[in-house]
Image 1 (cartoon, rainbow, N blue to C red):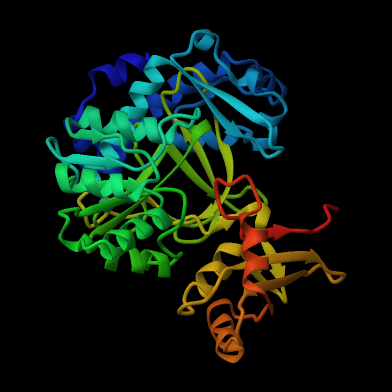
Image 2 (cartoon, rainbow, N blue to C red):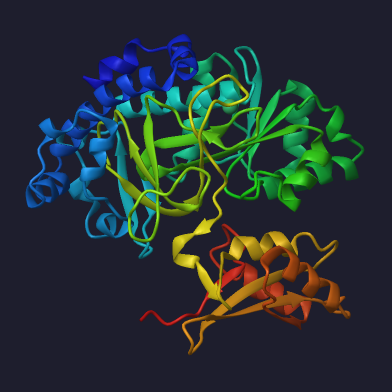
Length: 440
Ligand SMILES: [Zn+2]
């Protein structure tokens, strides 16, 4: 069974599979896929679903056969996530909560084997980011509040034989004290926090570039654009620390994470842990290098085994051998959420693209993007910038035209007004996008 597969599996096995040709990888994946589907067939949701479409497990002997199966959406989870829980997971080792599309929390139980599998996932991701046994890694992410990311990083570091420093977010003075004392080789955190941490260091007589930190593993905010170059935030971060950036992406319900290697060309697909498809609006596969919705089938999950899960995130898959020596495909940066896709004057836009363009304007104040329904099947997009003095509107407009190929309406408000609007949410994240479209 799957549990024994990961039990016997170690770093060397993982490295050798990633360097092997795709035929060898597929052989391993088919076997793991069959076992994963057997787990899923024991859940209420998939048993019912597959009965309806007259699918039997004996039909799967290649990866292409997966496409015969219906996909699973976030709405399916919202409708009752308990139907996805395998009977073995009645006594899970960890309960994780994630927010559903309706805002209701979804319970995702992790069995002990699932936690071990995730530790293996993160061990491989840290290894590809250059972290080695004996290195210290400062974790500036939370390990509590039923989030999985911090716990996953922690267990991957430990499994690799490196040393975790569980500092958590916040408190710049404490973070710097730990950096000086413990000399971590890498830091894990949210990009905007890591930038503030560098700035705090500079203001307090420390040069972050001489801190010995060589790698920044980032979570939550994009640091790369769709063409894989750094976003303005990514550039600032890399310059401030003089360190290399490694973006990571995962989803709680998928129990799977992608991590970048030194070639900086997307997060590697881990062949014994996941299968990735990119689809268009009709559900058909999109050719490599083109954007579409990311659909993931994790492999080897025990407690909450999802199959063909539509993430709602848009990205591209890059195939062909990677410069790092691994043969596995890479998932490019998340370009936007499907639910936030905007139709504006014949162009498809995501709020993230507008943020990245605005972040190129030096010293620009706080801003947000608002979208309303229009009458012509287009959306009405408005950018609101907080400024107490006059802005160089013409150059902002020209930049938007160059980056987005359209010029959304730009208006200004008092800075305090904009700050109040974007921070007036649950306090976890600044909200920069307000979707006021009517659902038709
Ligand atoms: Zn690589």
